[in-house]
Length: 65
Image (cartoon, rainbow, N blue to C red; front, side, top):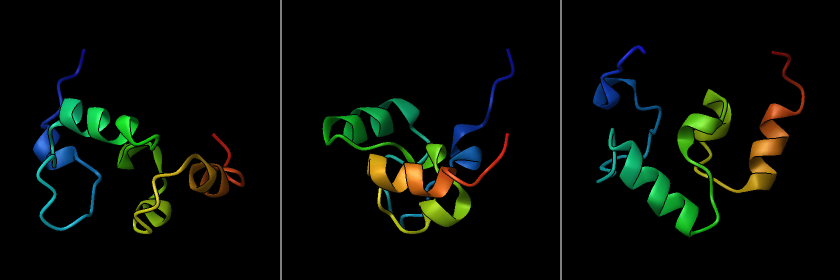
């Protein structure tokens, strides 16, 4: 298993986020509000700060794996 430096690898761009790099706290916070975390989104989608399922689908729809 590859260990990441979560502070450095965190894809959240929200300024001053108190959960930046703390994946557990981030997932708990966003899932508690029915949202997804920044790491699920494309870079463009993440910058909208809309963590809804609808936004996730819109920004993933046209992409190919």
